[in-house]
Amino acid sequence: MKKMFLDFVQLTALFGLGILGTSLISIWFFKNAHKKFVILLTLVELLLLGAFCYFVLPNKNLSGMLTVNILGAMVNSGLLLVLWQGLLSREKRNITRNWPALLLGASIGAFVLLLGISFVTSFTSVDEVYGTIPVTTEEESEKLASTTETPIALAPATAKRKMLQHFSVIPNSNMFSLDGITAQKVNGEYVYVATVEFNGFFKWLKLKEVPGYFMISATDVNAQPKFVEKAIKYSPNAYFGKDAARKIYAAFPGYASTGTINLELDDDGNPFYVQTLYKEYGVSGKMHYNEFKTAVLNAQTGDVKLYDSTKAPEFIDAPVTSSAADSMNTYFGRYSQGWWNQTSFGSKKDVKIPTENGVYASGRITPLLSKDGDLLYFTDFTSEDNNQDSALGYTLVNARTGKMVYYRDTSIGLMDSDGAISLAEKVYPEKKWDAQMPVLYNVDGVPTWIVSLLDSKGIFKKYVYINAVDNDIVVDGDTAQGTLDSYRLKLATSGSNNENTSDTALTTITGTIERVQVLGTSQATTVNFLVQEQTTVFTINAQNNPYAMFLQAGDTVTFKANVTQGQQIATVQDLSIENITQDDQ
Image (cartoon, rainbow, N blue to C red; front, top):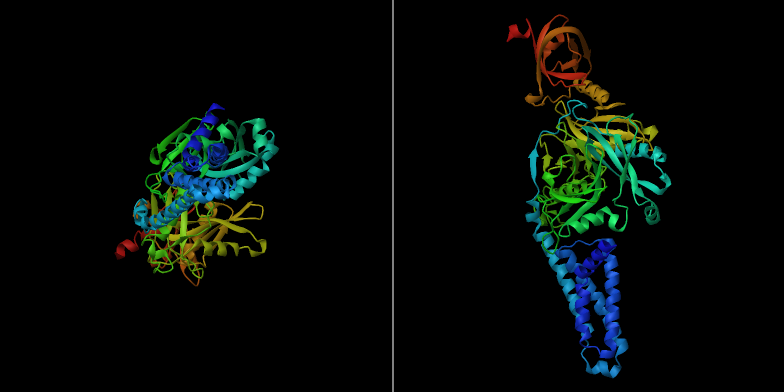
């Protein structure tokens, strides 16, 4: 209670200066008999303001304090003016300067000035803020060699549905609800974690702590959720001193927060709440995207620590939360050519808009795990023109470092995620399944959309792989790896393999042919073959090497292919056949 009272007093002192200042000035001009009314009014306003600030938690920075204090001065001056008019006689008012009216006018003028300065600096600082985005540009997209190396996550809606089906395992489950769901790594496994929160104030007052959280594999379609019993005393839906947001707010008053608080687990399953903080600059409250801080709250002890985002504890997979990445994406897409360019009067050169087909941050962010084990935020960009269906590139933001990579291959036209969703939903139109969580990968040099199909209850049904360049190539399947293998075969038989996989990803293989299959279509001839002591099916388009059509069992071959664990089909490059191609070279 003492801490709660001190927080209340501190907030009132910080944000009540406007009320207190206008009241002190007015007291000098009221009769002694009327000063008590001013004091009483001031005390009531300060109490109400303190309560407002205690529950709303306004940012303790220059822009926040100026705004609240000036608004407080405006309200207080208006009430003092009413009091002035009511307490003084007409004759007295006629011979006395109306100080409350003057204070009200000054407060309104200060507020208008603040709005004007904030408006001007919000666009004059665009170049400065844009320069803080840690972005690099590349042409070759994230490679998908196998789903073992690069896991394909299920849509969070599927995970949430399964958790809700198991909700009754929670003691007093009627007193709780399922809250935010986040992707992360725990002991090397890619999982979804969801918090359990109180259903209102009286539920919290009765139990005082959350019994635990749900966890489920993010990649296994058959996985079932596990409820982990870990007493959580500090949570976002708790109240007063147990409110997680309030603990972080009170510990670091000089920082503003962005987005919601995420639950993260250490390798022992202990819960921590994580929030991205930043320093605001100027009265417009602009942020610098290369200066994110991360607040980490121990949900069991209440201990709060602040880190540079890049130096957060190892178990924190997302020191930079999705909302921070979303803000960075929006700024990056709109302001690469300055503030005027993106207005209706500008040319809108290089202006690109994040699509809203993600699962985080108002639908603009999708999490994925890289082959290096880093959590990334994926967002693709499209044009403001609703008639266009072309992607203008996409970004991957590293959730730990906050660094952004923008992928844009100007040599080809890519379908955006809106188009991918539309095509995926047409695979089984009679079932009316929803397409969710589109992510763009590089499969053997071909930009490929991977989309999940869910039924109306959020239950996973199919994966759909869509060629982002040649939209006629669409493959669906029940498992991520199985669908990938079928897609690779479809690419090979259709002659759509771009063969631009990096040489560093290729393995040179020499062996003896065991079996051969030649498939001919109107588009291309494909040769599939097995090599002794190899479990992978190798495939090559005869357009790339005509000698491949003459392969037969017993031939000795040397070639390059991108082969990883769990991969069943691999596309071949640089095929050499002993006694055939070597003699002719």
